[in-house]
View 1 (spheres, rainbow, N blue to C red):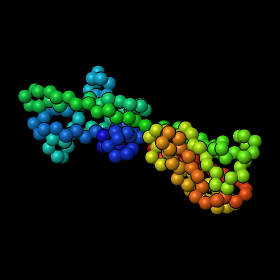
View 2 (view 1 turned 60 degrees about the vertical axis):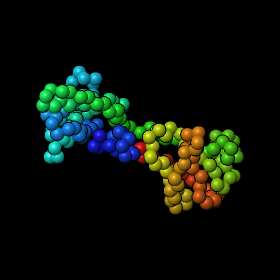
View 3 (view 1 turned 180 degrees about the vertical axis):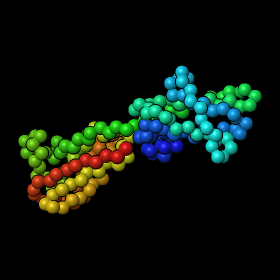
View 4 (view 1 turned 180 degrees about the horizontal axis):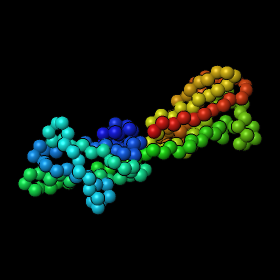
Length: 176
């Protein structure tokens, strides 16, 4: 997967027209690709380097997991196949943020606290999230905090310093 947009080599892309580069022995004279279990095949084209073939999908591929099947045929008619699991991911869930209930010192759920370094719990964070930050605005200043994922898979953020009394606006930003 050439246009892998996630963590390198995780076979995840946000491109709905994925590009594949296939390396085969130089005596191969045909390379075909399928993502529907072999019902439909597309021919790759030889690249500038011998044994390297390229194909970019010409139509949009749906979000979700897919299995690429590659079939290579050599001059003698021998065929070999290889499969690659890949994922198209162009969607991101809308994250949530809430004051940790243990720091909620007012009426539960009112988002009032007397804790000057409160913990916030983040929810609805996609499993493939790479960066999760919280932008905090207060009195004309802006600070960006980096959220951490705990051992139980729960994301949270705690201010780096103590907060003064007042209203704060928190915005969660997620990149997958």
